[in-house]
Length: 212
Length: 212
Image 1 (cartoon, each protein chain N blue to C red):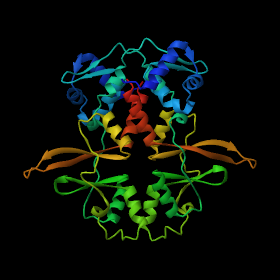
Image 2 (cartoon, chains in turn blue, red):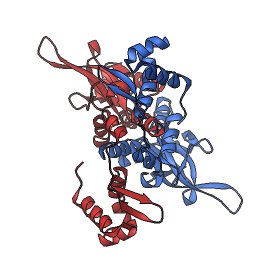
Image 3 (spheres, each protein chain N blue to C red):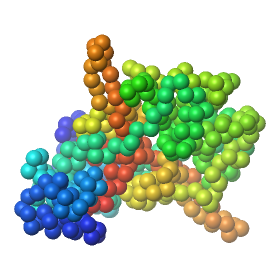
């Protein structure tokens, strides 16, 4: 774990003081308590600092490795993904919308022959389309979808953590899970084999937190 | 932690065998490997079983409490919520849609005077409306919103785990964070003070998993 400079300073302050409240740490660093909160959370979750109500923060020397966290990092997308929900490029926006309702998903993967990934269409894309004057029954999803190569993807063997980071960093709700290969013409192709969503991460979070 | 009967049987099988593959456990229970996977995940995450590549599962006697997991359970919604994004009941669906885009959120909290919670409107509600023949510029959000008391809520001091479970169980992407009180007329009111979403949980998951 790499600590930021500010986090290192916080640890030094806590070490020096024995125990100290978050407000006092904030005052010493000339920061607000709100600004400091993520740092304190990270340091507390990692076990470097111990937080006690009313007492404040103190430093914890006896930090062993956490086997549960270690194992959590080994979890792979394949065990937690959902089934892909796909639509063809020439389906109408109307049809795609109905598919989202009947399948109760927030986005669809747009595929060609052999389930090759062509693009993604989200509720947001459909909302944008419905603001305009276009005929949802006539216009195909291919017109409004986000198209390859502008799609963030994951693979069956990617660690769940790294896939979750993609969801956060790229501000998307869902990643297609793909298996890549090179076809006879030498093109890189991605076959869609699943989807990995914030719902999957939320379920996993609950599962982990409940298994003390 | 309460184990299911099947999980207890799995633990017995592993104890008896020293170490055993998932396939063999599945065969002994007359189940598929896929059916067994959630149980094995729960047992492995909790530290009862240890999984090793090629060797399989073995039983772990030296299970101490996990301080990180304990602290994870103490995290409260207040530290991880987002700012509320609200709209008035008489705003048009069109205005609400634009607000979702400009604020980049998947749902809006519909409020009355004093930020009292009246309902919620999601991308899904808007998509449903746009499938019909209604005029998005004319119809107010109050007509299509999910209305109180049919709203799942959370509070500032609710544990994150329990709020995350609500998201999963009720299949919603977002919960309004509220502070409840009784007004002069004796009505229960809920003032909206934030929102708690699957994005918040996903970010927290990443934060925890990265702080080994």
